[in-house]
Image (cartoon, rainbow, N blue to C red):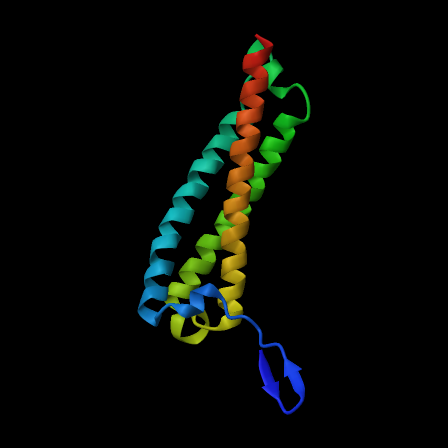
Amino acid sequence: MVVVGEHLFMSKPRPALARLSDTDQIDLYKQIAPIAGSALGFLLASVAILVSLDPKRPIVADLRRGEAFSLLIANLLAACLWLLLLSIFSLVGWTFHSSCGSSDAFQSVFEVIGYAAVVELLLGGFFFGYVTYKVAKHD
């Protein structure tokens, strides 16, 4: 908060990434880019495998029964989108750190994308566990 005369102004909070030194910010971008890309590849392969399962098999029919399987696929695709954005923003922040990667606006968007990707990954794990539990309980 900033007090000027009798007026009270709320200063905008800075992104957590802005508290790091420039070198540490670049290192963070360098580390997140391959991690997000690898996770994206894994999730795309997982979605492809889940979608291509033969629906004539009884266990696959049990797996697809209900809304949880559709939610799992939708959530994994959303996680893929967030991871793609995260890897793109990491590469942009790493490559163009001096021009845009060090701006508060870029860092704020980067943090939101990172948090969204983590939340989608956690939700995907929850839905996968729920669908698996449903199939195992049905036997």
